Structure formats: C-alpha cells, structure tokens
Length: 396
Image: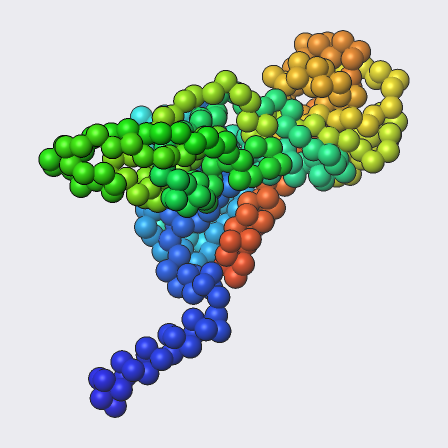
C-alpha cells in the first residue's frame, strides 16, 4: 500500500472518529497529569487554599501521561503500592502528603518513604485540601448532603476575594466585550450570572505618530461615544477575565480599572449551614450521624434538650467555626478534632458533635470523582481501598 493511500486512510479514520466519538473521549488519548489537576483546580482554585496549606501537584511531572487516577483521603506507602499494582500513574488525595517543608529526602519518616516510593514508580501525587474545603460544591457540601441537609449556604464566607473590573468600549463593540468577560468567569453574584452595569459617556484620546488607532486620526483629538462596563470578578479569575476583555476589545490600547472589594464572596468560605427536612431529637440525630459516617463513637457537648433541625457542619478540624455556628443560630454543629474546652464553649447554645476527622472527610473521594467524571466521563477514576484512618476505636 502506497504512503499516500495510508495517509488518506488514516486521515479519513480520524475524521470519522470525530463524527462519532465525543471530544472528551478523544482527549483521553493524550491525557496528562496536568489535565487532571487542572480540572480539579478549576472546581477548587488554588487561590482559595489557606496560607498554611500545600494543595496542587506535589510530586511528579505535570506533562507525564496518565491513564488512571487513584483517589484517597491520605497518601502513604501502602497507597503508592496500591497505585502501582492497579497501574495508576496519578494519586489525588485530600490531605497533602508533604505538609511541612522537607530538608532532605531519606527514608526516615512515612512522608519521605512515600515520596521516594512515588518517584521510584513514576507515580505523581496531587492534593485538593483547603481549596476544596472553601468552595460551595466542596467537602462540606457533600458532608451536609450525606447528613440529609438542604437549603445549603456557606457558614463563614471569605472576605476580600472579589475585584471590580471596569473598562470603556465603543458602543457597537460593548456587548461583545461584555460577553467575553462573562465567558471568562465575570459577573457571578450568588445565584445570578451575567451581572454587570453599563453607562454611556464620551471618551477622548489623541493618537501619536506611532499609533494605529481603531478610530480617529493620528495627531488629532478624537471624541468617541463609549460604554463604561463594570463587572465583579473573583480574585483568582481577574487575570483571565482581563485577558479575555483585551482580546475582544477593538482598541489598540485598552483602558481599564481593577478595584479590590470588601464584599464577601457568598459561594466560597468555610463550613456549611443547612436544614433537616424535619426536626430530630438529639439522640436520633447522633444515631443518624453514626450510621452515615460509619463512626462507632461520637463525642459531644452536654445535651441541650432541644430538637435539631438547623445544622452547621465542617469536615475535618472545625472548632474555629463555633462562633459562626452560634451566630447562625444552629441547633447543632458537626465537625471533628474538638478539644476539651471547645465542648465547654458550646455553652448550652447548641449541640457540638465530634464525628471524627477521617469520618467527616471520607466522602471527598466521591466528590473528586464526580468532578472528574463530569468533565471526562470515560476516564478511569479509582477509589483507594487502603484504610488510611490513623484513629482506631477500642471497646471493652
């Protein structure tokens, strides 16, 4: 068979595949570690992680090919061995395997041994930690839904994560520029999108001899009818929205302003607040938690004698949100890692329940799987079968 016929045959086959096979499936042929991590970070931007955290790609080459990903809460040597045995080139955990800085890489601790094993087997490791805690469709959302809560909202919204972007566009191009900013992520306000404010006015400018003006003449003062467009942008999307705005803008030099705002971002923050469909007794409520979270023991503050319907939750260590739960008027607050004096601080205002750190974050694997399969439905996403819960329970 001649090279020309081979080329035509291959080209025809590729075209046929594009007709009958969706783009996500085609993209599986060239999936990289970076592609998987980017999908997760699009849902939970790294800019939302706490200052002490270490989310994102931690070990491995972002350009390495990947055909399977293993999801877990924690990474240790057993999880790396499981990934090797199940032929997974990438592990994504909730907790970062490297949390503090490593000064040397010798097999002295489980962290160092885990990293060495991953490198030896060409397995990348990424983490989605507090960035996944701080988004609405995150760790606390799935915990709240597992507990049967609805009408959910962020318990403690993040402050100062909003910018206002303002630009000035010729009238006939205003809608195109505005739509480009919307497409890049601007204009979201709670349950609304495509939010903006526009005013008409007159812009003036004079192009020098080196300019190539879209309107007006070099050396002459020009007045143009323009639209002033104002949109709100999450801080982590500001650069992306700005680039989209400039690309869609007809002017050679684009005038714009970016202002930091004090407003809360209601769709991001710590904890979650929601409601049970019907009130429950404190005993029934805690029994439901044990069944839902598969935890044999609960620690709790003194019973209040009140029924439970309005509930605050925080997967993992959430004692810092007790004040927010009280202010929200929650009947109960479900979290973990509570200290002795934290239970005192409940002060009879609500029922505090420590349901365990692993137990309140175990559904994170399911959460990450949902994010990935929504974007790449035919990609192999596996759950780790290694029990990494470091806390055991003894019954006499």
